[in-house]
Image 1 (cartoon, rainbow, N blue to C red):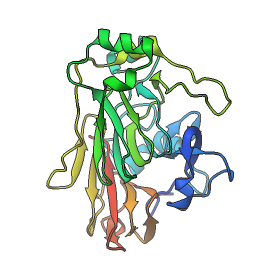
Image 2 (image 1 turned 90 degrees about the vertical axis):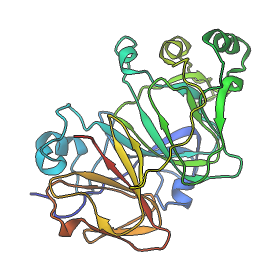
Image 3 (image 1 turned 60 degrees about the vertical axis):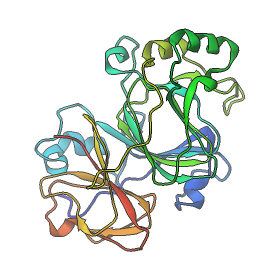
Length: 312
């Protein structure tokens, strides 16, 4: 049976040593237990180990493999799995300094390439993002810093504000700092190489594994001092080979009939196709919906949402 309104998925919450409880306190999520720090909510995921489910039990993978044209459009990619992974990240401590392998390195390292973007939904005063290298840093400098524990001193620091966006192509060394609530749109990959983890232990009390060899093969040592994205006149934040993300805040049609678009509410509340969505909610608008079912309206003065598309 064809869906007659947007599709919602149940979030998959992931415990992390650096996580917190803001998905519960700010976004109204029901977390799996009352004390564990949860750092990620996987909102749209076609991973074998973490499969998004609709409330009536359909998996994202079933939709992708059995109803691709109707749900995702006639021009949907032919890859075996839905090609994006969408998350909310609650960073109450600094994440590891890390890198994701570029495509030309991933196969050699038995990993998956991962380009991503971050939308800053909330930034505490003084919160930091680490991204790219400081100008002039060389590979030799970086390797020396690995030996003496000063890697963080070589990574470029950005002080983000709520509403900022940063693009993280594969190969860019980076870390999310404490005090940030982030919406992350990325390739469908879970390959992360930690190069430095602030010398801390994991939730099991043991030091977390580092991947120094893989990191050194993946880092772009010509990537210096990146800046946050400039928003285009139509609201576009990022346009790359893997996804296009637009920030919206006014009544509109969510895509066109025949097109699939995913909505992620980052502030306030909206109505689309008779369904109300609040901050922290994601909904996939199927290609088969007509224009009437795509009518989208903000319900609060501060309502904002991301429109996420897979390039044809």
